[in-house]
Image (cartoon, rainbow, N blue to C red):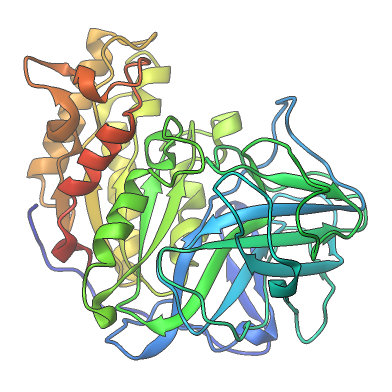
Length: 420
């Protein structure tokens, strides 16, 4: 990795309400319990709020598995990177069309093996919002819970159960959660799990968990389906950011970093991709700048623009978006690590024009000096004898997405010292 100098941090605004305008005029509202946020301040050790888990959300599309809910309980599992002595949840209605009524929320450690909804009901801890067990999340808003006074461990699973007593309307959803989501009738927030059934791997209305801990801050991995880990093993936490999180936990406690995955399958730099949601430039503020305690973002995106346009997108257009993202991050005092775009020969829309654009963008990433550091994912996963395609041992078979072994190789390529 190469290294350049970043800029200083800004100081967040505080008050009874914390209001942050995102691209496309979306509002981010934070409850009074979160008025002490330190979202853009550097962490130099000591107990502070840090992002430990996140998921980027989109409006629902026409997929048949897209859900709407009415008097039902969603049970979702989040895998924390760093633990702490208390935590808070972040619910989201950013893409909703009506206020989201939340009847009750509980959290509990998972009981039993992965891919199950089971908990010990005696361990279910109620979550409150401004002291109340129920709340309503306005349209276009994110809602932060009161702190929950409970120790949570590093590298642990939290089971989050949310009762939705009224019709939810359009959901804010993350389709490729790679973790099984469950549903039960009525208020089953403290139920053991026997009334729950699997409804797929999409996540709904939940986009973050912050913890109070001794940590150096958090790092956001921002990208598309490769960062999202869409072909990784279900319920196993084998996405490449998960493996980086495991590496970070081996460092002394004050030097740990929370890991936030802002990967969004089918996402593009330039255009709204439908099921891939808003383009990167539009979601950058919500999925990076509004996260808690962020020091660094690792940016790996652009393959969808190249692939789906069959080479019609020019490399200079993609570079222009990178430059905008870098400038906005630096204004907030956040370092940016650029990841080179991985090979895709053999994919349906591969052609020579697209490959030429990919190589031109990668050359700029490596040589321009625009990033604070570079991680060469392309060099790690490509076939040495045929560098325009993935190495066979890392290819899931679609010639775009690395398998678990490829994702682990990508994680090993990230130099930990460049994340601070």
